[in-house]
Image (cartoon, rainbow, N blue to C red; front, side, top):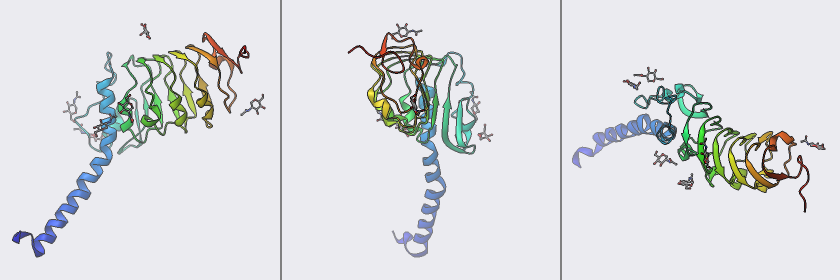
Length: 220
Ligand SMILES: *[C@@H]1O[C@H](CO)[C@@H](O)[C@H](O)[C@H]1NC(C)=O
Ligand SMILES: *[C@@H]1O[C@H](CO)[C@@H](O)[C@H](O)[C@H]1NC(C)=O
Ligand SMILES: *[C@@H]1O[C@H](CO)[C@@H](O)[C@H](O)[C@H]1NC(C)=O
Ligand SMILES: *[C@@H]1O[C@H](CO)[C@@H](O)[C@H](O)[C@H]1NC(C)=O
Ligand SMILES: *[C@@H]1O[C@H](CO)[C@@H](O)[C@H](O)[C@H]1NC(C)=O
Ligand SMILES: *[C@@H]1O[C@H](CO)[C@@H](O)[C@H](O)[C@H]1NC(C)=O
């Protein structure tokens, strides 16, 4: 204690402060996105090594993850992930819950893979700021979660060519920024929600029981 009085104590404080500000704070800020990608890497089956060949977590210096295949950052030397684009890689698995740690993610493309299983019912807590979500041409199944309507920034929502069943949640009509939408080629039935944008018949084609504009009216 005697040693920590006066000048020594001030020096001690300065060292602690520098340590905190120079090391811990920036690393913490970056680490969530690294954890996010590590968790995708661990949870997804990658039989053709599209990710295994470039996603190397031994180097987590600033910006290292920004050169990973399919990863785009807000800034090339800052580990903040903007988009994850993993289309056409023959990836398998369920929707990666670890994406919740990519807290600045605006675009997610998992199209043309072998992803399967239901979408998480809390999807809006996992990908809060998405403007574009492309899950087309996979094997996702179950109901489309009504919670997707809470992803308020969505401009693009492509769910076509999957095994989604049940009704399209009416809540999706609340997505007031949506410009592109497709649920074609699924197992959906029931009324099409009223959207603020106008979509075409092709966006709803090849489902066993969808009805209402732009398809023929539902029989009541
Ligand atoms: C990953 O990067 C480290 C250095 O950052 C290197 O030593 C190692 O060989 C790399 N591993 C692979 C599989 O490329
Ligand atoms: C680690 O990543 C940084 C940023 O991408 C790069 O400049 C550096 O060469 C890498 N180090 C090793 C050992 O691969
Ligand atoms: C986010 O990362 C932390 C570690 O930084 C981890 O404990 C947590 O499980 C991760 N969250 C998800 C949803 O993977
Ligand atoms: C979402 O729900 C799953 C369980 O279905 C849970 O493991 C996960 O932690 C939840 N994620 C968030 C961000 O709430
Ligand atoms: C897709 O999922 C269904 C069950 O939902 C399963 O029977 C089928 O084998 C899967 N198809 C592919 C190509 O994985
Ligand atoms: C949608 O179509 C209706 C009728 O054709 C039209 O009145 C409306 O302005 C269109 N809305 C948009 C957002 O294009």
